[in-house]
Image (tube, rainbow, N blue to C red; front, side, top):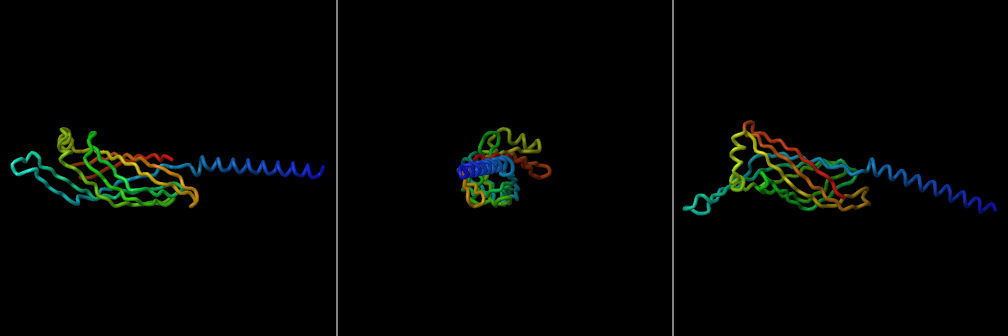
Length: 192
């Protein structure tokens, strides 16, 4: 009779302990370890390359200009897990038209860390200036662009748990002509 009672007490204590551990892990998962969206900021550095091309001497209407702008993409990871992502491409849009691309090389953003990525945005000025609203915006004093990118990779927690994740990002960029300044606001949402 004594061993049966001792076995019941041991099983009850073990069950209570397991329930307490499960409650603690659940609370931590929904509070402290809950994935937080990374903060992304774009810092244009200036014109790097301007190239002119002509479709032919007799046809100057097919002239095109490509402009490259050096920039730094700053990523602030506010999570307890590191994020390693693959090569990605951001597309620069002006009023619904793709007018440029920004290659983003693969990298690893450490847990609670920051990463600066140097890259170059290649603008297709012929597409940009072909939009009827472009010169109106220039004369009004500002040109509004947006970028869309999705970075696919893995989140690693405590160097043990690896989870597939993607981080879609959208940045709204305003180029102010008079002051020659740039303002960017980026929104991200991590998807596990």
